[in-house]
Image (cartoon, rainbow, N blue to C red; front, side, top):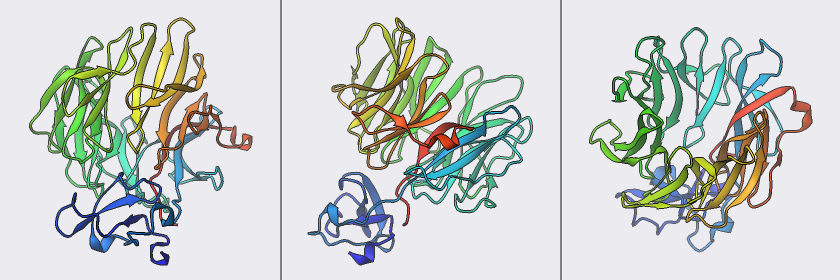
Length: 376
């Protein structure tokens, strides 16, 4: 197994049935053999098929987040820290406000939004090189919320004019830059909350005019073959299969799931709380979500099995101290999120504890994103 040391992926030589010719199925080192992707043989570290998952080398991960001083006038920048809370560094430039958004699937790039002027642009950079920022959009629009495709070969982001028709549209761009491609645009409506299917062949998004007029639509990676599915908000695809979870309703609201585009099943089915913002675990077996209780006026971060059972509360709080922005570890065992400007970590079903030590309490910590497995 020494040959695997320091490599991101391992694969079992016989695991070729699901992949094109010349490729093999690769499982993340912290995975169960089911969560992975097809890679060229040259990119794989071949493991002994009889060695078992336990023989795979450990997975190193880091957590990126937006950090700013708790004093007016201190800019927001991208920070990165080891998963144990050590080695906190600021990696983006201090000349603008910059907001963390996503890691590339191989961990070699991060995507974020920067607004040095009245507009905002989408950037990528090597997280180990603070001088490697690349502006991918360079326009007068407000561009934000970039996410990488499952293969990492392009990003999808939201764009909105600074004046006039303030509708939000979806675009794509390569991580090396170049021409941007419009994917979804509609005058007077907003196209938001894109999510990739597990195989990268479809993108689901929300088309809305207002809260009462919102439709989930799927399309190809080039913006073709648009297909309205149903009324709903914030669609999120499972990373392991064709299951789509989304919010239905406004007050109350519940989480529904659809398998292979079929009928939707209500996972939460509650009357008082408002459920929103579902996030599948990387292994696809659990869903994190937010739940607002209209009686207690508390917002809770909860986790349940993907069939809606075994729901537990990890943290909750009133306005000004609410849990938000949950992000799963690559193995699906832990969650990091922000609450009241502090990063919290939880290993469900246990409740959450503060992630970074109190010595960093002068930094307002939000929008955490857990990295994929990184080279050691």
